[in-house]
Image 1 (cartoon, one colour):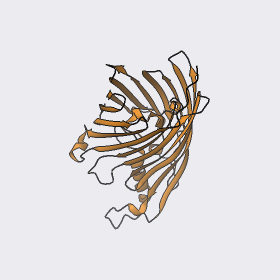
Image 2: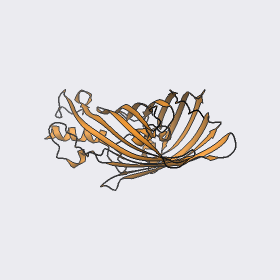
Image 3: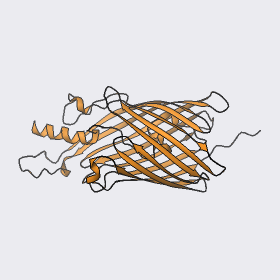
Image 4: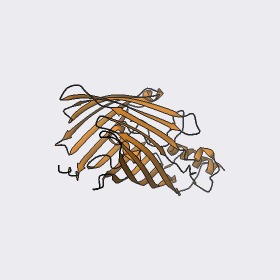
Length: 303
């Protein structure tokens, strides 16, 4: 019984616990890769995009979460659909959440400047606890040298409306509400993967030929709970190549972000989060690095 209870405690580390327990990894630069939470974004750009996101949370805290994501998505040559996918690895001490996700999006032209996209995604999740990395400094607590692993199917769906200067989307993640099984039990409700509702929106305001400001918002809510989180962001853009911004994540952190795009092909972004909770007494902050590339741009129709 003690062994099972220890495994459940470790599992809560990777599922999330606390007042704002989000089971899906968050990214401060979400506006550049919102495809990760909304499959309807698949195919909405006229080029393919590959992005690597690397997030290091709570620097200074032992075994703090680290998240690595590699995504690729883009349009079909028919110009009204797209395909994509991503792989990820989310590590917190001896616990790991990793997986693969494939998505499909279909776009409808509503007006000359408004498009609607519908998207579906399916994937496979792996939850793992490496007992060899656990040391309780207590000879009476022994859980062995085992690797506890479970594999689960995953599904996401989304809607996305966009135009030349704005975007708005709603997506549901972890739609299957599966229960994670480690060491033989699916009975503990705290081990359930709950459906997350994710809402994103933004508008770009041109200030001059070279400058623009783009405020955006992300709202996250876990269904059947009282857990929610809101994030507000403002990004200042110069000549489409250089940007800087600031964001506030409710009951979590304030972030600053900067980025640069080279020759309309390679882009690099960095963000730094400063905690607004008691974590600030133990951590020097959270770092996130994004590196991306654009390629295979669709040719415009000839007149």
